Amino acid sequence: MRLSRSVRAALAGTVAVAVLPLAASAHAASTKEGATAGAAAVVKQPKSLVIGIDGATFAKFEKAKMPRVKGLMAAGMTATSNLYANPMAPTSSGPGWSTIATGTWPDKHKVVDNSFTGARYDLYPDYATRLESADAGLNTLVVGTWGPIPTTVFGPAVDTRLGGVDDANTTATAVSRLTTTDADATFVHLDEVDGAGHYYGTEHRAYLNALNVADTQIGRILDAVTSRATYADEDWQIVITADHGHAPGGGHGGNTPAERQTFVIAKGTGFAPGSVRHDVKVTDIAPTVLSHFGVVPDPAWQLDGKAIGSLAPDAFDALRPALNTRVDELALSSTLKGWTTTAPSGWTIDNSAMPTGGVTEWRGWSFATDEFWTNTDRDQGRETNVRARNVFAVADSDEWDDKAHGAGQFDSTLVSPAFAVTGGATATVSYATNYKVDGPQTGDVYVSFDGGPQQLLQSYRADRNAFEKLTVTVPAGATTARLSFRYTGTNSAFWTVDQVTLTS
Image 1: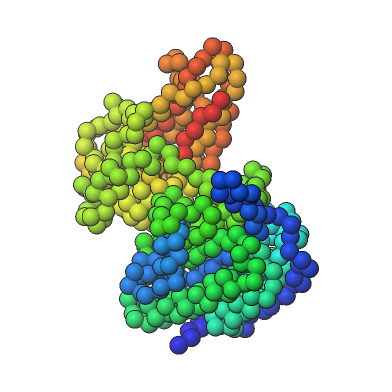
Image 2: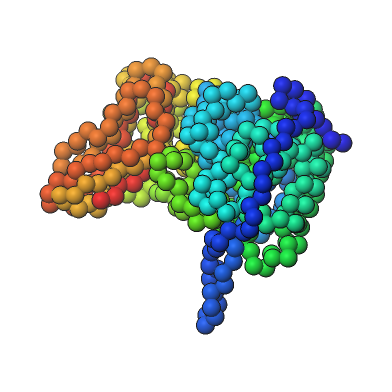
């Protein structure tokens, strides 16, 4: 049974459709596949298909049948990750789809609800618009059941933007366009799983049925791709994702794991069959599509996402197999592994100024996953730590202070390995950081050359959630540099650091 988006009455109803002319011919851009030894390289035309299932709760995929989606998972990559929550934005469709389309988080694109008031698509346009700017010959197509997808989230530069009255109509339109036109980059939005989530909740059989209906529709769309007369000459990148999940009783917008969890399933060149990753975010979809067409993001675009093929694990990520279950954080599942205070090779933690006691998991700098750390105590801003990936470093004076400890404040320093540098040159220090203040605390970054005195590189005294890139002058004759991250706090908030590099 088809379910309408009644809970969004203000934005529901018949979709306003803006149809723009299709490109007259296929673009000339192409990529080379690796050729077999002694044979000429085969040139194939890049093609992209992104399908969004509104309100799809990944944790329910196993219980649902969903053979077509599971087939994609077996043939490609699967990555789950978590969204933001308030105060960055609620887990709603407007912020979710805008994040996926633009490759930036809500604190940049400024879509914080389904009214789209204050949206900065002028600064952070959707990826199809960026493709059109790079190559107007590309044929871009958007088909969506929810009206704002073709009319608002994706902009007027897109060649064809079509609305569907329901998912059956959207599917039929997508199948027709993919079969009969030379669409290069296509985005398809299916809406009715979200309706089932609102009306029934994820524990009801009707929600699983809605997932299976969407799976059948996805299968029809995939079959339209493989039935193309030119399919053998095309290099298709297929991505499936969702804008948010749903609470068991129905609804979303909050900060529970079920509402925040989303996913990226990707098949195509570079995605190993059956692979599972922990470092991929929904913001990576846009730059991954751009990369498929040979478009390199300009740093001035300030995208938060990266092409998935360019992602590489850092030293913190190597700790995942050794993460521990809870000790003092009894609100968490006893089987959830997600923290350690054992630093990776080359890194050290100086806790010489730390008082004894406190919550075990957070005594000094720790290394944690989002699933573990953000759910220790919700509604305190931890859900905004979206720029960290996989395992990250965290100093959390607020959580540490929840158990009796010796006199004194939280005072811990995270020290990096020695990075090679060139004397007399400049070096670039980069890292992702989320520094949140809620009381007395300090955060300072120092650099030391060849074991010499520490030099203050950066101080934090106000909230800061960003990718940092700092320039430092390397003294003549210096060959190594170490970074130190010192955090102090008295029942305040936290500081996270990830993806630390120093290049000279």
